[in-house]
Length: 317
Image (cartoon, rainbow, N blue to C red; front, top):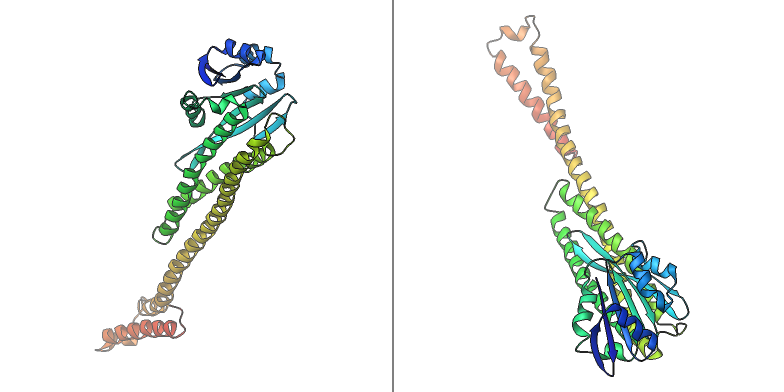
């Protein structure tokens, strides 16, 4: 599905993609063409009059790009990623944009919140596209980064919850939760870091399609992305610490169990020797005593208590 907008004389109207391409070529209007789930051939046929390089079109349609910005002279190719946090892992979706002096082209697979917000806002705020398409590019990046902030808050809540559960729960479930959260943050960091550098590149004065008045706004987006990246780094360190602490707690619990079993075995070993001696199949002198049975029981009691007292005195239990 393709939707196209043209802003002319301060009025935004939705038009056909072909009319939007003609308006972009005429130079009298500002154009936004949003392509969703289109093929390489259809995108190439639509954008051929604009002179978009085939490599840029191929990058737009493919879903293998890391965040980056490529300068083609008359236009920029920008790849960014939106994110949604599901359970312990992020769901990432690539958004490809081509920014020219008179047009902005976007491509994505499936609906994204930043693109949907732009479609809703543009009829009421045509100035986002009227002056320069870079304003609409900033709006998309601004909304996209705003959706990262709830993810960071949710990750922080999950880290705090795992810290509280760490000392109250046993088993492998909490270990799996920590590992899954760590993997999810690693996947998010692999996108946020390059995306931060991509936005920083847009703030420089080397791209003519980005007007100077837009650079302070893009720097604000960069500052928030840098803050998100720093928080994810700190959460990664906290998660690694939680993982190490959990392994230590499991090891300590196992040591306590082994210690208790060792104490039981140590106390039982002398008793086994005594009962083994008196359980032999030939008569012993103690069997003829009238108090033989109480004597054996007393030996067992004294032996067990003596071993227990010795272990207690040495603070081995």
